[in-house]
Length: 152
Image (cartoon, rainbow, N blue to C red):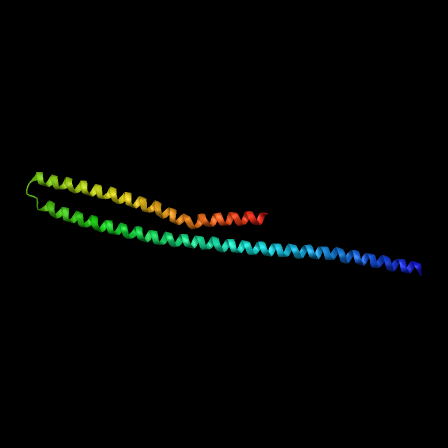
């Protein structure tokens, strides 16, 4: 009888150990799944924010390119009108001296206009580049901070 009792005690102890071990494994697995779910949620939020930043930058690019295109078209129209007016004036000239003076004035005016327009366009492109980079730069700072927090 004592032997049977001892066997029963051993079986009970083994059962308790197995249940404790499985309980620990189960608890660790549950904790790991919860942590993985949280990391996945954070990664999803980060990705969503990154996509939103790219969309915002894309909208800025589209608007900026549209504005630059309109300004280039306006400059082209003005240049054509000025060239047409200059050509009309050149056709009405009575002396070679007046012709060369008008031609020189037109060339100087066209060059000055081109330099001014080029400068204006360069400034607009630089400003646009900064505006396009801003949402992505801001998002990078946020993402870096969140990744740093998750790593801890």
